[in-house]
Image 1 (cartoon, rainbow over the protein chains, first blue to last red):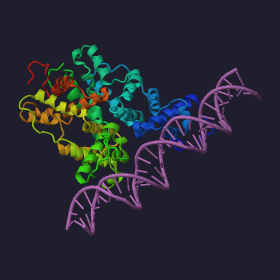
Image 2 (image 1 turned 180 degrees about the horizontal axis):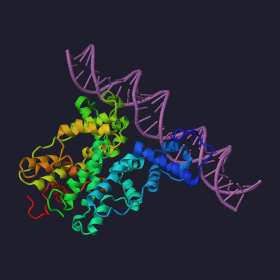
Image 3 (image 1 turned 90 degrees about the horizontal axis):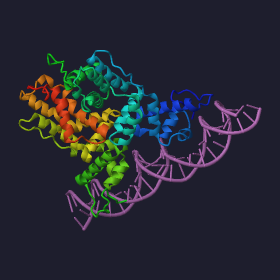
Image 4 (image 1 turned 135 degrees about the horizontal axis):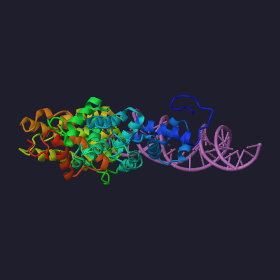
Length: 208
Length: 208
DNA sequence: CAACTAAGATACGGTGACGTATCTTAAAGA
DNA sequence: TCTTTAAGATACGTCACCGTATCTTAGTTG
């Protein structure tokens, strides 16, 4: 079979090295996004990448290794610095990045890994260690630390609990609604939960 | 094969009706708890229940139907009333109930359904409609509404966002750590996030 | 006790993935 | 150009599960 994932016919050229690996990576992410981590198979990835199983086994022995490689290669490096002086806006923005991941296959593959976490903690740990940490994907944590460093937030309010609020709320929303929250909802998470938790409740008049 | 899930030999008696259904329910929950929703199979459930596939197909056509039936039968009815006058304690307690679910197979099966939600929103919706809602499993929501009704919390603080905080944080913790949070951590979630969000920040001196 | 119902055991062909082996040949390097 | 490397195609036996069919027999009901 020489059907590729885009339905095109077999190519004249034979892909090698980086080009081939990249095609396999893409296939692995699409498979994980559509079928979940549990639905990954060597046959499925090979089929979608338009290559032979042999080429997969030459480099990896299990599908999840392909997926982790693929995510590491594709995961965007976090752009470190938040905006100058807009805590609320930066928080919403950092959550929008997270929520926006639900739109593209890479993000959906990431959520698939997260969904698998309860049953396969090892995979989640590897994802954290090999993908998430190196790429600095920390979302609200980065923002909160930034403003705490500027003295705009009480540093003692920045704890392992409070830095997780945004991610937790977005995850729960996605689980409950089957899609990512829109910007308006993200703003409500920031206003109703995150800001009060760091001592800057918008509804308390003189806060900050 | 007459191996049962407890390894006992085949029984003399042939189970029927409720007794058999109950054994199948238990098997379905154990299977889901161990292998996830995606890992459910008619063969697996039948094997574990020590019965024949035929007996399953006689009543259900897909494994997930068995699971939903099983969860409905086993899910405990929420005991409606929180304690008299201890908001913080009641919040911690309601989260402890949720966190405690991670310990037994029924809870793990529930988390398995939740994990499947992103890929199978229909299943999650059915779980909500057929199990969760009828059994009134609403955790912190129940507590917050109770105290809002008593005027101890500003009712305008009780929103679809704030009632989700506890569940969201517990879920995120479980995903990140592969286990449920202990009581101390639950107390931190209450103190650092939920109470501030409902306008009762423990760190603001004269709050409430 | 006789009749009926349903549990249980077993077998079937089909499918899809497993991991490995073999062979051809395109692409890269010397 | 010649050699080497690895991509690609294909085939293999194995396994697990699918859904259905058949037959026996235990348990219930009249």
